[in-house]
Length: 299
Image (cartoon, rainbow, N blue to C red; front, side, top):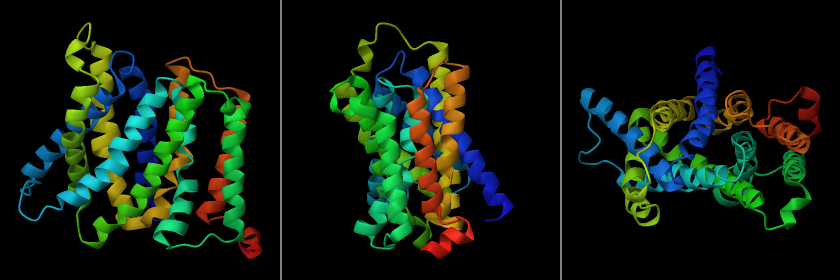
């Protein structure tokens, strides 16, 4: 990849790593689906303003709303909802580590669903290594119906949804949808889809008090930085460098999330959670394919 794409990738990792911090702050006062709606609705508003100013409004004839809705479900509604609910049970840094399993699920989706890349010997070993990392991270408590285990499973479900989104999202570059249009389209469709669900489930008008300034600040950071700007970078990298290179971002997201969680929120992860992250990280290295030559020859 070029230096420019590497800069985009590093920037995206910081933006998405920060989303776990912003969400944790917002969830102190708001319900998960309300945070999901605010995230996608505010991002949709910002991106649509940019599109109107650029002279190509999203609401025009020929806009692929079905594709945007499908991408919004896979890349926004399902994973955001699962992660935000999970973060009511577990630390933001731990949620980011579990999110880093996305390449493992992408490997399975690519093999069984997309049938674009078969799992060879080395990548099969990487898959087992990554699953072992998840087992170490969760520990024997996985057999106990504890809230933190349910939260961890929710974050794994989000990673699976992201894997399907990565495969589905390739169609936008193939049909010539610009990154800004794709980003605006999916969050706009997501906002319209989640609104009635949020109103029925969370009933935000029953909040005991209006959201505080820290909560609004977190929502703005989540929507404008970690969603609007991040998705423009996401689709640009996807179009220029492809899904395999894009998955490199999952290496770096936990660095920002764990750092902010420790420095600002006072979160502390357990040793087995760091051990599980190490195994997942090693699996990511093997899946990525940029391993040393002697490992490539082993395949």
